[in-house]
Image (cartoon, rainbow, N blue to C red):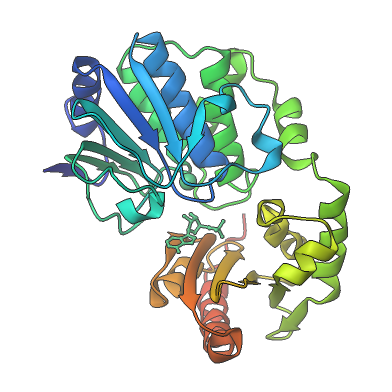
Length: 337
Ligand code: AMP
Ligand code: MN
């Protein structure tokens, strides 16, 4: 097993992955269940790059992408399946997954796996593992790999790289943005990507039902810790009353952060399968990943999540207590510039 945490370099892991891909012919691309913009962008940028290299590519995801991603180029190529029967010569490239189970796709375990990810605590489940916590989006890493393999950035690839970065940085709000992030975006714009169109397509494409859901969520929002922490609740009845599906909830968690005082948000999604999905977002140095880790989840400093079995009432207090602790700790080092 070959792996590297950071510092790709042409002779390092990125060069090895590039050489391995160039030698191979058939690929299955996948990412995490309930895909977001970075999983879609990373996979499709990779797919178009592999097309350019004359490779055979299929993309398999456990769940369909949210509606507002459906008319991005190549979306019709994504097969939805929870199990694949892979040929022995199919190489699997997993993007955005800290462990293989996050794909929600079975049948990949015995294939040659290339693991490309930017989540802390990646389990190094591939034959080749490249994870770089410093990347603002997995799409940044995919960009590097594509360029290492000599594929030019065309409009389709640029669109998907930009999509991954735009969404995974929380539209340029999160604290993991570097000059590199903008350098890659600059190159995407030079390839023809229109930032205004991208922002409208991703953030201003809500259904009326989603607007209703925003109203319902904010109506039932609770403020704790003297208004520093917002708590959002959602269940299947609320979704149904607004004519929404779970896919319509993407991005809603960011709404409370637009209030100056609010430093973190926790979003409890209660579903009929008795699973409680918990999403968290924060500002500046408030580290919600640490809280997610305590409950078996993961993510990034400003965006993290986890899933627990059982009833909200049993875990609510301890989650909120830990978040209040994370806020107190994070506020000590709030940047002034
Ligand atoms: P979400 O709130 O679902 O948009 O997720 C925010 C971040 O937390 C993403 O980077 C996810 O990959 C990560 N995350 C969410 N749920 C889990 C989980 N159950 N296990 C590990 N990471 C998670
Ligand atoms: Mn990501």
